[in-house]
Image 1 (cartoon, rainbow, N blue to C red):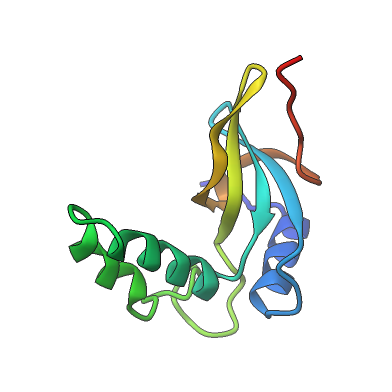
Image 2: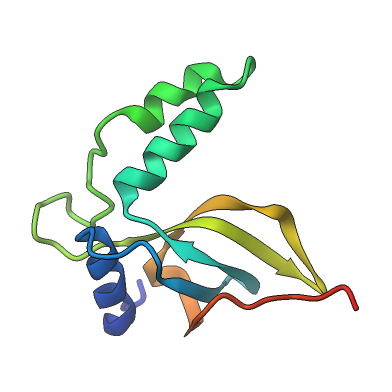
Length: 127
């Protein structure tokens, strides 16, 4: 098991505290580059639940995301423990000179799996 980057954990904790949802971040996870804006887990789960609820085929999964998190996005599940996940919204996986999906998606990334990161949303260009 790797040790999560303490600075990244602190950034996630600040986002989780609800003080800001404007933090843009780019991470490398398993060789994939994900770029977007962080959201508190509760906001992220609510948005995923709304999207699933609007789907005829995936509607039943909405309740899973709408339920209270069992671990609060934390290891060990106890209150006061540091966050274990980053919750991205308006995020894209960068592949060459394109971002997938173009409109941005919702991604949950384990902090311990992040091998590199930078502050900011890396933009891409098709030029």
